[in-house]
Length: 306
Ligand SMILES: Cc1cc2nc3c(=O)[nH]c(=O)nc-3n(C[C@H](O)[C@H](O)[C@H](O)COP(=O)(O)O)c2cc1C
Image (cartoon, protein in one colour):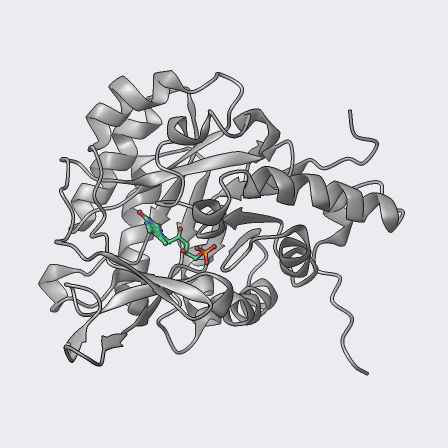
């Protein structure tokens, strides 16, 4: 039992500590259960779920880069029905499950949200806004304020569950996108998703990924994510879940100080499947060392130069 109160409220989702795992990097949770008691975490965010199962992109879909990794998985997943039937019941009842929602059409997002909301086991929804909208020529939902507003409005109408919107960092103004989501009734924001990137094999002169472009994640993106979390936290009143390159408690604490109420551990779980649990333990230790009785008191305490 910890003497520090690690509990936080993420837009209506009560978390026992501020550490979750990031969508797409932790499977459906069950894959990691042999390495880590998932009840040590604030919660887990599932892979993004679509109406129908998806096979994803052709390989190579993952490549290591300096300080990070590139991926173009293509949002492979079992589909919402198989998730509800097979994956969700396999998780311990005490694990807080946030389900990531995804689709190529707004109506698909809304339908996935509706079906997930029918399950008592789903504590909240996270809308992955980094999907290309086919009807708009492939621009991501999260890159256009009007499209983003339409998406959040539709999912908001489809569900009364706590609604997190996961923002794309591939935008000029993250503050503008954050305000759009708040205005449409989002309960919290998650940021950031991966940064669009490219790497090349100079011997073959080919892109390292079959998809050519991929999403950059890992330590390389941490300072960018931190900047965006800070800017978003100043733009909106709803809580923020910080994501991007977090692998240690020190990384996570930076996000809390910059205004994140909670954090998600992504790529780091590939290197160390216990990473998220260690981050949670390290946050408690930091709080103790700094005489904090409630971790929530650390949120948004960045000292700015006068
Ligand atoms: C292999 C891989 C798959 C991912 N799949 C998803 C996904 O299905 N949905 C989503 O919202 N984000 C997905 N992401 C993005 C992560 O959730 C996270 O936002 C991003 O990787 C930045 O955090 P990190 O640097 O800690 O990995 C994926 C990332 C990786 C590396």
